[in-house]
Length: 498
View 1 (cartoon, one colour):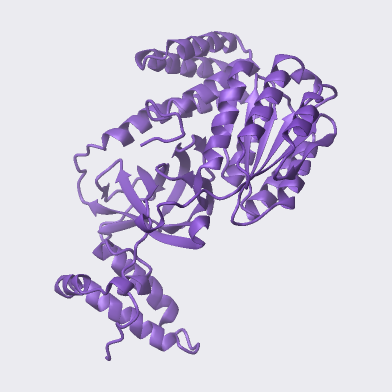
View 2 (tube, rainbow, N blue to C red):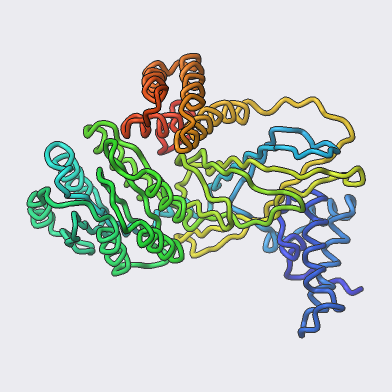
């Protein structure tokens, strides 16, 4: 076989990183061979491509030849993936068993600094604020929202674009999308907003989506932020369809829900579909801080259009997915999983709960997930696809396990969130006694973890439902988003965690 190393990188041929394990090399080769082998692919150039891939495989699987190759890769051929990926598991391995097994995997991805691009600036921001101005927003809520919107406009960079939609049972463009805003004129328009009418979220989102499209560029950070305290009725499906359309264009959709009467199920779902997040605001005074933090994170975005695409291994199913960083939230179970954007210095961490079917004795290693992270760095006009493979060895006997501290802590806190989810399911089925008992257990654990205020809320709601009553709207959201917030790393403000 003639050597064809010149001008290419063996790792790139297989689509793997230079620190890939032997298992990853073998898996990548098998995947490429199934696609390129001359027996199944008769396209022009396929045979030569297969020879290139086979040569890469043979060299990299031989430790001595790989070491020699690594030491002599020309600088021009070296790959410099701008990420660090760390995978940790709740178990060191799986067991031959006739029963299903449960395993958790924590995947953390960090965007590494590029010394050659020290002065890279974040991409332009193209954002629309969709503000609920229905009657229920009258008073402090709307006044704080308006003051915060004015403050944010004053902080925009010259390259940024912002628009504002005011909606009740109809939608109006309070501030059209555009850069170089006349601040005084914009302030006058915002001050003129007043509360009236009902809440029809779809009309607001539709107008916001159209304003984002006016200045849409794939290289921008394109985002819709919905602020509401109301419960929309009859347009939920239309909202979901619009979120799917936004996701196709990689336009994020995030929500800030104020008080207890908004539809958390709907707004969480819209965020999940687009890679955005959904935040709960208990007191109007918190509006300013949360909205300012949200815009700050968007303005610092470095990597855009992040997603995880994957295929579960044989007999493996994804049962639950949760994002721990940089923003807390439940993730969809079907790929691709939209993950939004990430700023420099921050990390994307997700926790996967995998269910593995019975494993027969002849299986020595179980493939859990085979996939890839994809993202773009607009400042470098670069797109990346980072292969990622999750697998565990399979043993005849159970192995002693000591999960890493961070995955153990995440699981202990995620358990509380899952318990309140289960309690809400029981309430919907009329199983009030079971739900009350479960919530009392949550309250006990919260007290043990130093969360007396949230524990008191949970205890109060447990007593309410003990005699067949539902959770209060306010209590439901405080419990749901309070237990969710426990998963944030200690001291993390979600802006620049380590």
